[in-house]
Amino acid sequence: MQTQALDPWTDAQALALRLAHPGAELLVALGAESWCQKCAALRPAFEALCAQQDQAELTWLWLDLEDHAEFLGDFVPEDLPLLLRWRQGQLQQVAVLEAIDPAPAPGAVPERLRELPISAELPDLWAAFSARNWAA
Image (cartoon, rainbow, N blue to C red; front, side, top):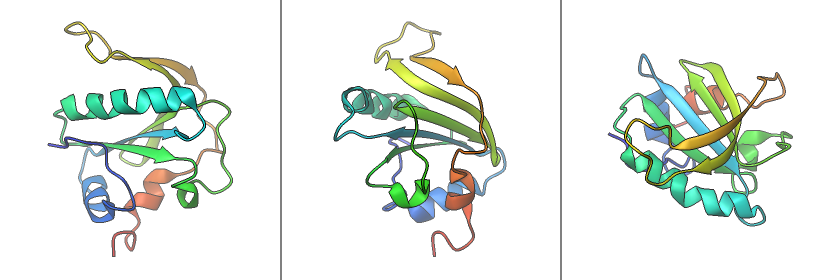
């Protein structure tokens, strides 16, 4: 069971192994805590939500636009934090993370999202983190 969001710099091997499993999913939040107040406010709630999950197939990442620029190329989101969700290598969801309720009611969805269309401009983070030589 994952208890915290992974970081590709320190958890490369664990990340590659998790994405190799059948049924694997990847949930990535893109933010910029140093200058985005909403990102700085939502990051702890994102980490807390990650710690509450018991889905072995779901891998959580928080990528900072500055600290993880190598993985994002020229991509800069129009709004932050941006949430991207892949299932078995296919991008399934793109949304702006508007809020996270740290103590949702039973059965309630803890995050409030503003859905966006899936675009070819988005970085293929699944491919980057599941590459054969990534964790070598």
